[in-house]
Length: 417
Image 1 (cartoon, rainbow, N blue to C red):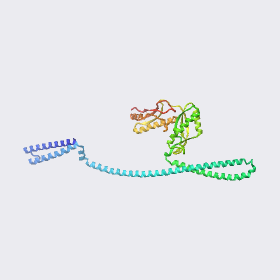
Image 2: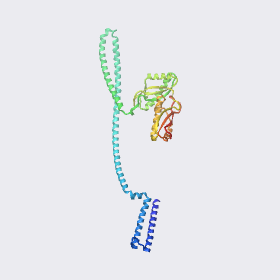
Image 3: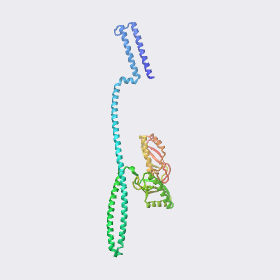
Image 4: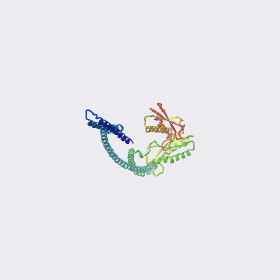
């Protein structure tokens, strides 16, 4: 419709100017008027030329006024051509840059494949060293048993020496080969001990070089926790402890890749420590939070030695108590604000764990807040200027043996919206 309107305006304008030029030419011809001292016939020609010039000029003027594209074509064509040329040069540079990045990406893929192959080779070497260490440990155990037997025999012979003086010669004859055997076995033990030390050093180095993906648990990491009622017979407490260790705690460890060779379990605990924990639980009338804690760093495929941490049931947070807080700049993006709030909730979880609260298999204290509250909190923060303090407040009185911990988020702005 815009093009049709423009054509109509040009046609009407041109027709009007032609009509006016014709009327003026007729009057000049009838009255035989002259311009600039020219003859009437020449004057008519001048008027006709002027009329044509006016038609062309008015056409261009109307098009320039009505259409921005016409103005650009008439007055900015050179600039557009220069801009187009610069853009084409930039496009070629971008194409070259993309090609270079694609080449580097291919090189990185090749390097990743090489590193992966090296890792697989290293892992195979590590497994071979582990197998070799097991064989050496078994051989060392046998040698130690033999040495203990020979040393026991030698001790018995020496103790009977004063009572059987008549058999001294024979005992000496027996003692000489026994002493030689002890010496030989001692040398074997020393040699095996040195070999064991080398293997342990190699294993330690290999563990250091391996990626963290091969570690099932790190030292002092929580495997799982539970709640056991105290004040009961010790046998009942032991039964609950065993059910916890051999049940959910063992299942959690096996999901992380830990296991005992030749068995369907993954956890190991010192019997004395187990009995001591059972006695402590039985000696209190309260509910007790029991945590199974990894004693050392444990690789995938190996058993997890654990010990117990015990916490009596106690109130760790009061209702409306501020558990943790974090100052957030309102100029941050929503994604950055979300990261800050998640860090605040992580601080809440860490403090609850330090207070002895029961945890889940994922190492958390349960549902800390309603997730639908977080977007609303972010929207509220964005209505303020400057810095806002976000507080995680306990919704109810919270006890260590009764989860989950529930909090709400409150804002303390430094300025009004």
